[in-house]
Length: 363
Image: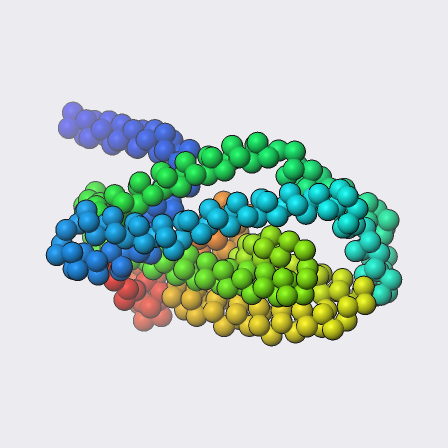
């Protein structure tokens, strides 16, 4: 009797201490999550470097980290700095009257009457729409211009988080396999199931991060280049916005380049507008249609509609981190139910075994 009480008390204390520890780590969720993701993505490179450096783990981990810094982190910091500068410049042009958002809406309205009919059907006033667009544009630009110091503070916090992520990534690369084995020993759901779940975690993380980032980078770069060639102001800023918009499946970068094309046509630049439409639909859109299913859907073993819903839901709940967390939760959901059907409902084994299996290597 005492033994059972002691075991039960110990388990409750273990749960309490674990929850308290997770609560302490909550402010650092972002850096910890991305340290794990980066370590998973660069793990194959780390393994190759480990062989090259004759199993000198610290040296291989440091070399992997330096490569990650050069090809990922430093370019991101440069882009963020450039985007802030272009955003301030764009506000100054709006404040000086060089760019007028209400004229944008007015010209589209006068050249595309069907838009007015649609607005009337939903009871939306054009004047109110122009007023809101102008206020929103000016408020955003004013915030960006007047809160440069705050942005600097946020950038400083961002740099601190990046430094913490880099620090943790080194140890994830160096000790990741050992930590994985410790988790497998500690979790009480069976070693085979745990290895399957960790493999799926690594597979989905690698696929969603690499896939979405590749698609976003390609679409943002192409969008920024075509905007620059067509003489549209703040091409780098719009390219970055298109890169973020591309994380939203089915809509993507079209939410940026389509209104810009309509505006060019409405202002008489028909050739430029048609060029932007053709490039957006035929090149930028094609990148999404070709690369996303190959890099994300195929590797995660999830249907396209599940990838779409889980990505949108993840972004809504977790912000920018959600484009990885959403599909990850969906994939683990499928794996857990596949294991359940396979082990607790043997008659359904043949239909579900593929959902609960993975041939990918270690994370």
